[in-house]
Amino acid sequence: MKNIFYTIAAACILSTTSCEHKNLCYDHAHTGIVNVVFDWRNAPNAAPKSMSCYLFPTDGGEVLRYEFTDRNGGAIRVPAGRYDALCLNSDTENISYRNTETKNGFEVTTRTTALLSDLAALGVRSSGAPRAAGTESERVVLSPDMLWSDHAEGIELKATSATQTVTLYPEVSVSRYTVEIHNAENLKYVSGISGSISSLAGGLLAGKAETTEECVTIPFDATFSPEQHLITGQLLAFGHCPSVRNRHRLTVYAVLADQSRWYYTYDVTDQIHSAPNQRDVHIVLDGLPLPKPIVNGGGFNGFCFCGLFILLVNVFNMLLFYGFINRS
Image 1 (cartoon, rainbow, N blue to C red):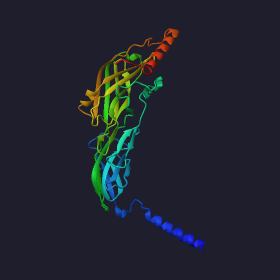
Image 2: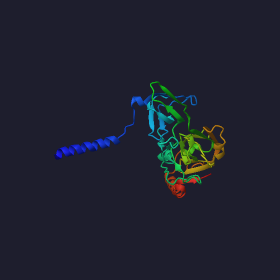
Image 3: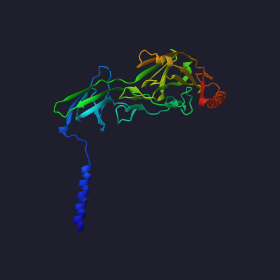
Image 4: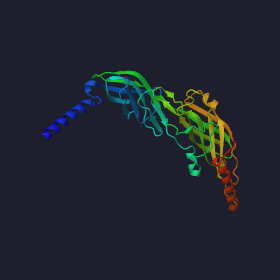
């Protein structure tokens, strides 16, 4: 009798719990075939390796994500309903997502990084490195990858055997900032150089095509030509100044052959704000007064004297902003 009682009790429990379990319905009677089309008329040269499409049920249901290896889209099966849509390329390395449960909250951002990682091989530490005045609290982040995105609202998808089409129009969603510094002095003595731009937008609300309010500093690798007295660099960012018009400062960090370290700060606000094309901003500066190293760049003649002098220079550098001297 006990065995019969336990069997009946277990059956009752199973029947109760099974009534509460609900699977997402992909019954063909309640779904439809949807041809997702990515129309590249707004970015004809784009060549992403993969695309993601997010469908957000307007009734608040679970968000659906579909992945495409064809830049032009493809066919998917979707439960019938009303949706908002968002698409972006997914072949990225530096980009991460936050608040992906809703279209308007869907945030694209990048992770924190070291300010002077490009100079680490020269023994330069990012910790304690000088920052432009007023930007010390800004998060230092990676430059985003190339990004294309689009969004649409109120898409009605029916349970039908006929193929339905949803067309999205991805466009460039990041800005490129190029830097040129002409008439830079004594570049033949430079061992390494890098830069950063402050107070750029920290993220993108892809479902609204708006930048987030966070201001960040983005470092970039720089190259230099001693023959042309020229320094160049570039970075990608989500944009600048979401609602408050901030000042933007470009800082150049240089390490010379004598291991001395120098930094220079320029206010580039006007060039950024007045750029005719906010997706392609050119920053052009004239003059970078790098000094000659204390010792001849061709070699350390007189090892004992130079070694002692370099030691004194390094101690002096440590006392001044962890080795960086401001020559702005």
